[in-house]
Image (cartoon, rainbow, N blue to C red; front, top):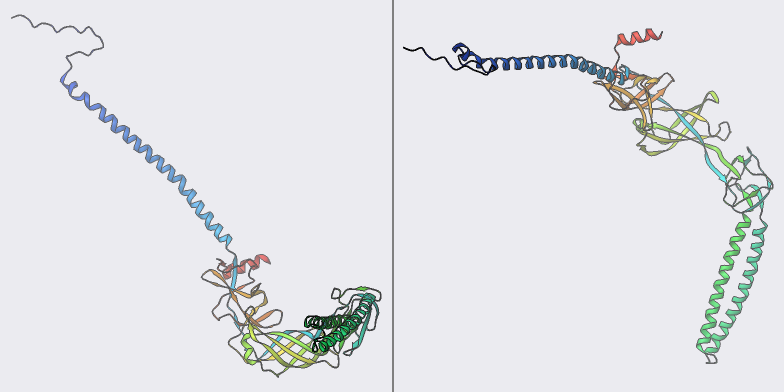
Length: 415
């Protein structure tokens, strides 16, 4: 038996031998999946690390942003101190300021143009109705009047001649001595010239009135409160400045605005007490003569007029009076510091807080002693009123209410 032939030699050194073992043949293909799973696992670990790092970096920033937003909101919301209103005594006497005016007030202007030749009364002079205050020289108007009078004379002569001619032709036309057409012509001329006479008369009357305006008379009994013209000054009809200013002060009118809730207490003819700073300790009596009979929707008040007898001349127009009204108690009265009031164009407001939101409540006030005020309408006993509200406070604004401890700390810090 001959020996097995040797396998052919592999001349390629890079080619593996064909006599690879069975063990190597079974395990060689399984090495690649192991490496792939390892790479995936590493990638997942890397992603997880990046996510953790991102979360660790974002969370502090998110918390810082939320804290900053919260702090900003807290700082943006104004800090306020609140307190409930204190109940006061029902109002039985209401004291309101009243404007004192003259019964009649009139500026006096020139009704014709010219130069002031003389004035007769100065400020403070008491004059009667029809008294001559001043005189104006207006030669142009005088000449216009003379011309108008001459024109009137001419028109009257022409009209008279036309009337005679018309009457003559009316008599002749009856005997057929003249034609009807000529008669109608003269009749129409008579009517036309008569109309011209009336026009000329009206022009003369207008100029006579203008010359009458050269003398300035007092329109009523009163006192001269201003004289804005002097001798020799040129004045123009109806133009500024006014020549005189007059006021009737025998009776004075006092106007005041009464809160609408007390309108039922006002009776025409009632005697009202008034006091004046110029006359301390003295009480003056006036009569309630009329009201506006309508509540002002802007201020919710009733305009009241009180007439005061001033024949003795003790009171002056333009002063301020304190008007004392006897009123029937209405509702509950609350007392607040004056500093709680908010002055807005739409009227007085008081700031209240409900659920952290500010509300501006319209109120009607009664007596005001300079430190406290009486609120007649607008508040309830359970309202929380803002003390010393900021001027920028608006309706519906979020506010931060200070606790008593914060208020105490702030007051101690201020001290």
